Amino acid sequence: METATGEPHALQRAFSAEHALQCGFCTPGFLMVAAGALEADPDLADDPEAIAGVVGSNICRCTGYEPIRRAIARAAQEQREATA
Image: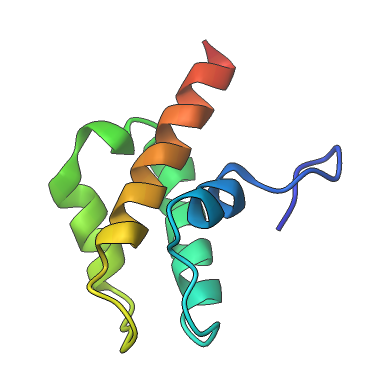
């Protein structure tokens, strides 16, 4: 999961910055479902309930999901700023 320039995707950067990376078992699923959600709705950062729905579709036994929700919101904001 990288950009056309070979740089990490906004979600990868956000997951690292927000300490949302866990054991690695569920992380790929979170990244993929979040990437699809951000593609479908670039304004996802403005809707915490929608982010909770995205996160709730994947089960993780390592976390309370808050860092993952923050990472998705951060990536959405970063992508919005990049296209503005």
